[in-house]
Amino acid sequence: MPSASKLVPYALAGLGLMAAMLQVFMVLNFEINWDEFFYLGWVYDWRNGELGLVLQTIFLRFFTWLPAISDNEVTQIVAARFIMFVGLSASCAMLVAIIRRFYSARAALLSVLLFLSFSFVFRHATSFRADMILTTLCIMVLWLIMKKHLIWRDVLIAGVVFGFAGMVSIKAIFYAPTISLILLAHWARSGWSKDMLIKSLTMGLVCILFFVGFYALHYSTIPQANSSVDYVSNVAGASLFEAGLFPRWGIFRAGMIQNIFFWICVGLGFAAVGGKLRQKDTLWMAIASLGFALPLLTIVFYRHAYPYYYPFMLAPLTLLIAAAFDTRFVRKDTKRSLMVAALIAVNFIMVAARSAPQNLTAQQQTVAQVHTIFPAP
Image 1 (cartoon, one colour):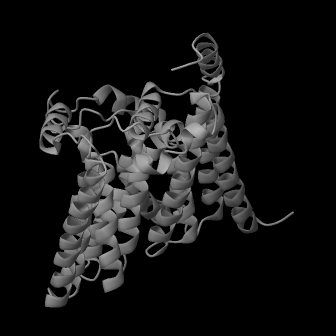
Image 2 (cartoon, one colour):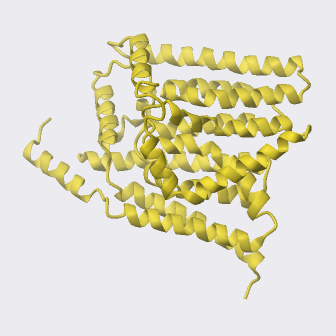
Image 3 (cartoon, rainbow, N blue to C red):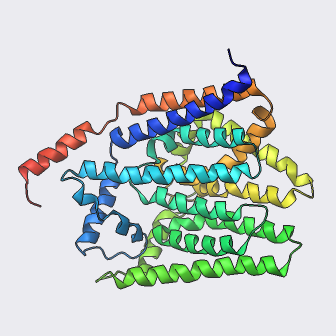
């Protein structure tokens, strides 16, 4: 029988395969939320030249092929979900790459798998919404700049990517404090050098210029574009502070109850990274790491912090969870590593069991019947 230490790679590989297979199952079978139909409606409006919105619609250009997949709208949404699955996979790969710069491979893999097993993430990460596209772009920016040495190539690419992310959704601004803190840490670690200051300012300038450029190009193709100033004003007014503080506290509380181990690890991660604040050589990177928790604070004021928002909000917390794993659980303790993997597997099984009955069969049949009764639009 192989030793416990030799079982860990197999356990991690098996857990990763389980996560991937369960997400594919969710793509194919989980019931479709009303806003997935809403986004599909936007695709049709875009194809017909009837959509006047400029902001938060540029991603629709990449989904104009959906109506050619099938006459059934449910099947079209399932096809779009596979694109979200690719985005989720890319996000997880980049998160592992970020974490590996500071912690062990074992901690990196387990922290990302724990994130995937979070109930709201498991159920909504591959839904057909702009959120996973936005998450992938924002994680890409963090992957480009959260490293020990920042180079010009990464600065410029990060600026372009974040500019495009702003066009996908104005929620990209929720990652701006994290990005700013990382750049501040780089500047401090460089001895407040002029070169690093110029790099940081250049990234901001590139972001703004490309956001304006993407906006202008997108705007030029919309025959009857609506006012983006009015749109942003309305969206901000309806989304921020309108319902007071913690407008979705009930949802957050449910997420805490359903995912206790996740939040314990986040708390231990804060303690582990916080301990590095006392060491001069790790002070600023510890501050940057704590900045990965800043998107979580949006639950205080963001009215639309529904379950589908959690993949975007929680993804950066994997860095803190990895700190907890390396400090408390898995770096040198094989048995604890296997116990953590087992707990994550139980998480996956429990949320999958709750989700499986909520399938899309009835929706697919209903849509087919509608097309039978009304063969023409």
